[in-house]
Length: 160
Figure 1 (cartoon, one colour):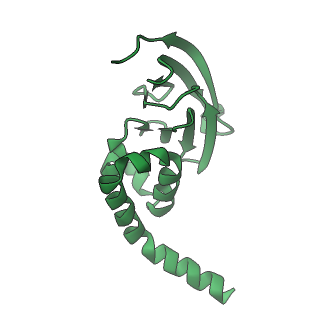
Figure 2 (cartoon, one colour):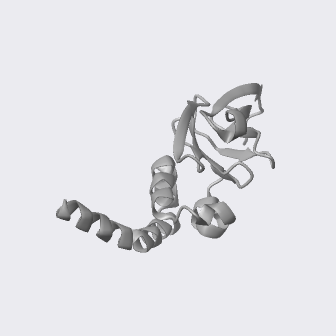
Figure 3 (tube, rainbow, N blue to C red):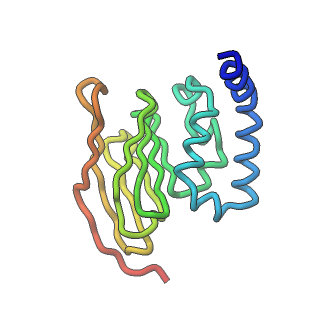
């Protein structure tokens, strides 16, 4: 157990350096990082102090990740939505440290955003030419599992 505790302590101390490296990778290899966006957000959320996102927005805590239109943070509900290249959306529940992945589109997610109250999410896929609206909800008093369901979907004109 000494080895495990020692390695955990080293990893804990390395969190600021890991975040600095992720920020550099986003700056230098933006396209490649976009291809791994859900995994990148996993690393960021592991390295960021949990209390920081209770009082600050994701843009304040780690501005580099907010350069991606596929990442949206709702401070009201403490959720983060991340659109992926494979058409899925990962919804992170910061209150419970859980992640729900939904298959949202047949092509890569171009952008997504929460409504101000966090009850709705919109996602857009340029490759699919589709805009989808999602209702996001949790159980009573924010307890229990979250349920996300598509409530509307519209075809859009191709973007030139």
